[in-house]
Structure formats: C-alpha cells, structure tokens
Image 1 (tube, rainbow, N blue to C red):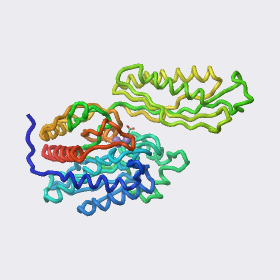
Image 2: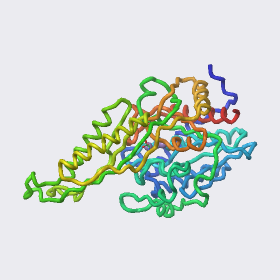
Image 3: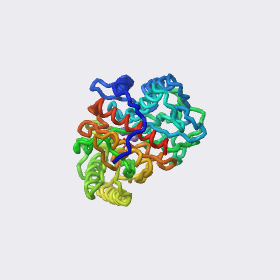
Image 4: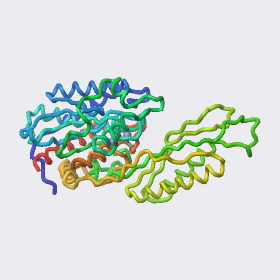
Length: 414
Ligand code: HGY
Ligand code: MN
Ligand code: MN
Ligand code: MN
C-alpha cells in the first residue's frame, strides 16, 4: 500500500489544459496539430512565452549555450542540487499538442501550484526545456540533452545542418537563445520527465499512469545510394543504375529486419530522390534508418543485417552507397529510487499504474547518465503520436501533473 501524500496540494488541471492549448497556437496547423521545429520562429515564440510564465512566478530563468532553458525556484536549502523536471517544446513537422509540451507545462503547473500555496521545498526546483529533442530538423534527436550529459560533443552539435544547410549554432543565434552558461555545468539531485506514452498500452489496460523504468536503445543511419541519372524512355532496363529501385529494396529490407526479432522496430522515415523528375531514372537517393530495441544486442544484430542487405542490393543494381551510423543511444535503465518515488505517487493517485519500458526516446534517457532519473507516462488516444491527430484529455494531463508534483515532493523529503 503506497504511503499517502503528506501534502494536500492539488494541481489545477483546467489551468494546465489552457496552457497546453495557448502554446499550441505557436505553430498550430489547420488539422489541429503543431509544427514547431526546433530553433524556428515558432520555437522562439513558445520559448518567450515559457520564460515569461516562469518569471511571473519569481523563477530565475537561465539559458545555456545549447539553448536549454532552466527556470529555478529556490528551496530552504539552496545549497542542495535542485530536483529538476521538464521535457521539450519542439515538435515534429506534423506533431501534436502534447509530445514534449505536456512535460514542460505540467512542470510549470507544479511550480504554479507550489507558488499559490506558498509551499517551500527543501531543495530548489528547476523546470527544464531541452533544445531539439525531436531531431527532425537537426539530427540526432535529444541533441542538447545529449551535450548536457556529455554524450555528444558541443561543437559537433553546433555544426549540425538541416536539409536546407542552416547550422544549429547559427539558428540558435538567429532566435536569440544561445545563452552564456556552458552546457552541462549544472547538477541535479534528480530529474523527472512526464510524457504521453505515445503507444497504446496504458489505454488498452485502462491504467492512468506508466511508471517508466527504462528507455529502449536507438541507432540512426544515413544512406546515400548513387547510380546514374538516365532517360526513362531511351535507357533499356538492363543498362540502368536506378538508385530509387535500390532505395525501395532497402526500405523492404529495413521492414523485414525490424520484424525478424521480437521487441524490435525498424523505420525508414525520410527519403530524398534526385533529380525527382517524372522521366528520369534517378541517380541518387538519400534515406534514413531508425532501429530500436530494449536489447542493445538486437540493435547491433539489426545493424549487421542492414549492412549485409545494402551490400547485396548495391552489388545487384550496380550502385554505390552503404549505411553510415550517425547516432547510437544505448538502452537506459532509470534510477530505482526515482522510479520508486514515481510508483508511490502513482499508487497514491489511485487510478491504476504499471511499470513499462519507453518505446520512444526521451531527454531523460541522457539525463539519467548524470543524475538519478525516472519518467512518468499518461495515455494518449489510441497511442497515436508524431501525428497531428495526437490527443489526450484534461483528466489525463492533470493526473500526470499531480503524479509529477507528488513524486518530486516525495523525492524532496527522501
Ligand atoms: O525519436 C523519438 O523517439 C523522440 O520522439 N524524439
Ligand atoms: Mn517527446
Ligand atoms: Mn517526439
Ligand atoms: Mn522525449
């Protein structure tokens, strides 16, 4: 039986719901989704909104040189490393209103609830917005939390370019969010991330809270297949070196490899065909591969299968090209004491919970390298995410914020 909460604080679900819908306007799409790519003008708008909302509570907001934002609420023992919580405000190109945003705005709701009650914590609190969690515009994902955790070199990150050739550092300057503080020079006593599950398990089992104890491993690859541009009418099939035919076989191979072992997934999400003309057999295709599994050995086995499959395809079709691995985030196991605080808070909340592994990647997976960390999931409708139809409910968002509040306060008393 969970220890009941020792505070009588309750978050304001309606205020959280209104904040989610107010910020969804920054990059809102006609279909009800959000397009707020990292370091875009829309990202600048939501960052400015977030800074003002935190400063209105008396929080000091600082920005590091990767654009990560930290809103600090003092505690009785300001000498202690803060208990931190947060997530990300950037979205996929056709993202939803909740992925990442819920974790940041629920953290804001926690600060608002404590502020209204004049509740003083023992340790300071810090609410975090991590830059470029999605990795859609600048690869890889979780770029700035990866630099913070020492897993990605800052110069490498700052020099990453998007598909239009803009660099991360230049875009950070353009929106005015390259701070002075060197990224990674800040310590946390713990970090909690609330996030929608982005899968169907909690809804299927009619449980309100996911107690996340691990995040599956991820590897990303880029493949550029080179053949020869050729006339679609005058070039006999036997003389072609068609990079798109090759790419289509790679897509089928990635799907086969993703299905070949249990608890694995494989995805080709991005493809660019050159010259992309109706009557040219394409001579060049760029594509990406995303492999994931809770078992790192299976991710490595999928990589070996991919290398072999691409070699066969290029040899058969007379193409050049091979997979280049651009990202490797091993599976992450969260801190037992943080997971226990989440589980106790979920049980005290009393609407069902279950331990689970995250299918999606999260900033928490990197922060777990430098601080005790755990995650909280709440359901999203039919598990749909990275989709403009992504949705959740006021009740589910409020539940997540309440469990986040309680887990942080339990950890504060630890
Ligand atoms: O890729 C991911 O899992 C995260 O949503 N960026
Ligand atoms: Mn996310
Ligand atoms: Mn996402
Ligand atoms: Mn995430």
